[in-house]
Image (tube, rainbow, N blue to C red):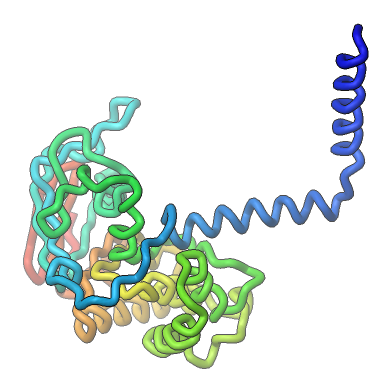
Length: 291
């Protein structure tokens, strides 16, 4: 073995020994850093935000028309999640999507914010095919869509204010705008007096309201709510659906709700789409939960 090889071996052994002797506190910090980065991706799925446009928004940027044309989604294991879906959703609609588990509800929603892409057919957002959006511009499309899920994905060591502000910070929004926008959103969801509290101090319903506030903070054209009341009691579920209805009615935000909850779907008295084995089997205006 030559001198160079001896030197490299000594360096490698020293690095290995250093890793073994790494303090547990340092390991914990590294784990927390990885978790924070994961949360960062969860609250703002962006590569690098473009500069904020100051000119007046075009009609396409202030409205949301969604269209599915003969959309089929087949996963690698051969499972057909969606089969020849044809669907139009107009700006300002409130739609409930219902069906048994595995009917294709979540897959349909994921196609709208391009977490999945169709195997066949096309999905359009304001007449633009989503498959034609360059990857570098996906972040701009996704900022038009707020998402609310069953699991809250809140940052436990941040206050209510900080949880919502974080969704703006990681997208490069200024501190001045954050200080202006976050209190307004908290007032909309009825948590204006909870800004300095931590998630563990709140009920499940209040935590879900934080998630909804975070979804609204970018002023999206569409809010997608995938089983938002799945972990809530009936009273909290009723409050969440009433809040979604109020946002739809007062702000004009398009709401797309996927749910197994018969009571909240019936409370909405809005358009109901029923999926069964990946197909739309019923589409009713002012419909009821019926599968």
